[in-house]
Length: 502
Image (tube, one colour):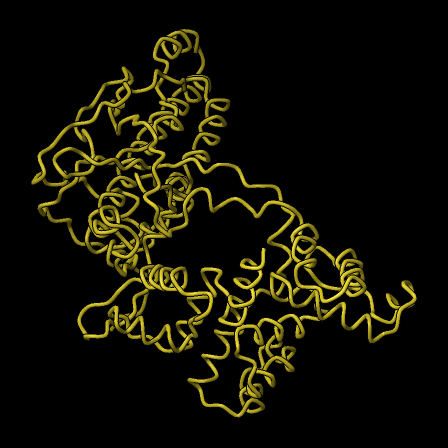
């Protein structure tokens, strides 16, 4: 065999992340308001871009209840990100608008003129326990105001109440007491024991954990309130430094538990709020502007559209392009103008494809969670990004980007798209499963209906939930109860007793 240099031709495939592809991927993750800002910057940078008139309001295509979703082509961005199977045309009670009514902008770029309807925003809420738009605002008032409103009702005597109010004034924004009790006792001229009584009163207020002098004390207060402060949990809380250092095997040996119990304890520990005071005192968050509008039709279907109020319509100013082209005498000027025209055409096409991708994902979400839109959160199904991606023939990462930072408005309220993706729990009969949000709604319903003289324990909730078809462990019930902001039986008993006294 002869050795020597030679030339070979080989064919291979590779993924090249061009700047335009990177930009298209970024556009998918932006909300409508962020897109509006992006478009403003593009208008400043490209003289050929201009803002056209908005699409006519409420222009949607009515379709019968047995209509099929129009099969949109998978975007070039999605094909490059990952492989996906082709979407099937399945009977679906959804109309996603006029997909094929194109309009020529005069520059060779084709745009969709009636992409989604400018529908009116519904203000109905449906009375469900989902994260409605009103629940997204920060709690009004400061932490001190919240605590001051409680202390008078639970203090045993005016002296202890005065000490507690003084301590409240010393708390930092996270709810911690940054100064020692001995120092405060010296300032007030009281005994340390009396100061301890005042601190105990503050630590008994809501939210649980305020008045703590360290992170471990804050967590311990919450564990006691949740009736979880057993010797094993106490050992874990006493060794939080090991958790911070990542020395989990050593921490597990100290606690003396197996892998399953250790994982359960860790999950429980991480469910506690290390800075309970931070939920107070902030400025209320601004109103959420929905990106997607879902409205019911008379034929039991759904109209799904993008919120055109936050989507400026881009066009290429052909007249200005012709004017500039006539004045470009040198090669560099002509190249610059050609680049600007190509950039403008690409941006219009990329934004149009972004709209189609968002609507395609939204249509599948509405199909998968049809029970929620018709009957409420108790009918919310377990759903994963992968399930939606496989159903519409897209890559899972594309669906993740589409559902980030975007909100959907329907007659039941406004919800983040991520809300419709939820883990599931086993049903008591072993068939199917239920969404975690549906379980939370059932827990809230049971607790709201409980008698003030017969507060339900977590064990009692387990039994009642089993009767409703949910097979849950006590720790899981407690985790869900805490996740929706409901206290333990001890805390609820005290709160309802105070409410009754007033």
